[in-house]
Length: 158
Image 1 (cartoon, rainbow, N blue to C red):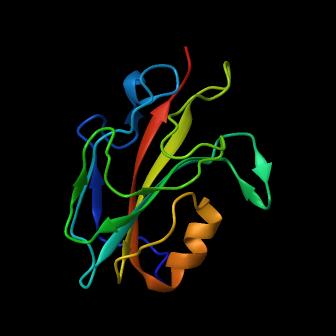
Image 2 (tube, rainbow, N blue to C red):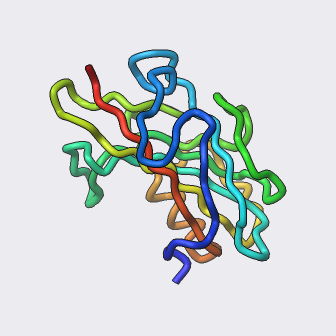
């Protein structure tokens, strides 16, 4: 039930839903996380987590597909936005093996990829250790998930 989309709305001042992510937020440029904002979190929300996933990446690893670009958690329940290159929260491990945000950089000639920026609303504030993978994070937060929604950006290498 909790993994169903909620009425929470996720936006960014850097790009609109299903529109191009500016190069500043990609691995080809400054590689800084984009600003994100959300509203209408489910009642009882005490914490948040953020994930960026590219399902179009041609990778299958340990039973999952695509490429995880960002895992961020331990976000307090009283915030409704993250600034560009945010210092807020605890960084998890992305699929490049790095901590924090790693922006889009699909293989050359691979066409346009979709990047799902998920915001997860949790029933309690987490204090999880740094460096969790997406699978580890989801195992911890799934029982406490109140709702989620996403903003989808696109990127294609020139």
